[in-house]
Image 1 (cartoon, one colour):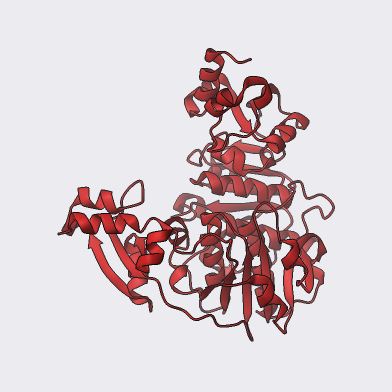
Image 2: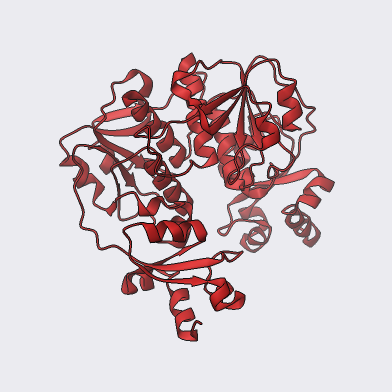
Length: 233
Length: 233
């Protein structure tokens, strides 16, 4: 059973202000709910279609075809850990929920130690981001931070990709550092670019003819991170 | 000026059946329209906000914030060219418009000679695909084909990524071949897998712990294609 008040409460969590005030977010789908349950996250309640009925499920679901199961999960109260002896991503204004979700999934696959996001990056607990992470949200440490300060106080190399950067394949790449990922439309901001120590470029093919003007932000992240990890394999 | 009948006609092109019967598709935005005009595509007509008015623009646009310019473009009548002495992609059931658009953009950046898509891949002229290509649609040769037949009659290597494939970084990769990209949820179909000659795997980091169960289809495409091209740089 589910009450009308409970339906209303769950639906309210599709809005950031209620996620903030309640400290809860929603995950949907069998696999996502299983991932939540086996993670360190606190799962407040699980709703199954066979228990609450199809009509109620359709009302609480944010998906066009409601999944058989939905969970309300507590937003962890995580204290920021500053970057140290690992490989990190710093997101400088990623706005598209699908891109943020995909970047978390990339970070998970390639064992990124933590992801730091600027204040103007789309919120992690936005339902579209949550679903696009395919569970990576439960595994990759994620912090909102002032990217420029974070990078400028970091003792190691700070990498970023730029159209006028150096060919990534002919550069030395450290297995420890921060890789800055720029905004979809404008790339890395001027302020953040000033604290990047190593400007990289993903060469197109043929090397002198990119065709496109740029790669999608998540795609550029993947190609860059894969290259860092290839060097350490 | 724009007539009511013209508005209706343009709006109808958001549906595949009308794109098919009219042989036209829609592109939006200053950059996309410029790319169309300088491409070999036949631009039927260009509509600008300052000419037809903001209200009419809002009606014909498929975007939530209508762009200042929209063009109706003729779908090219392209005869399929079979893969030969280059590097090609074969898409085995890509369903998400954003993924198809992103894959075209990757193909453009990395100079892929042509993209072949199975019948069950999302249609190229779907407005969401068109916009996601960021103009690559005007530059990358694209054909719908029976992927399995195409690959089985191809004399060179046919690559595909599989969770039980061989580490891509320790394999020889030819600069000529077809790379098969699988469906988002199910990967490469059984039928197509049977004609793959070289099974690849993108190693996670650390090598024995992928975290995620998989990478997004467009991300896997990018990492794979980048590695093929890196070898030729």
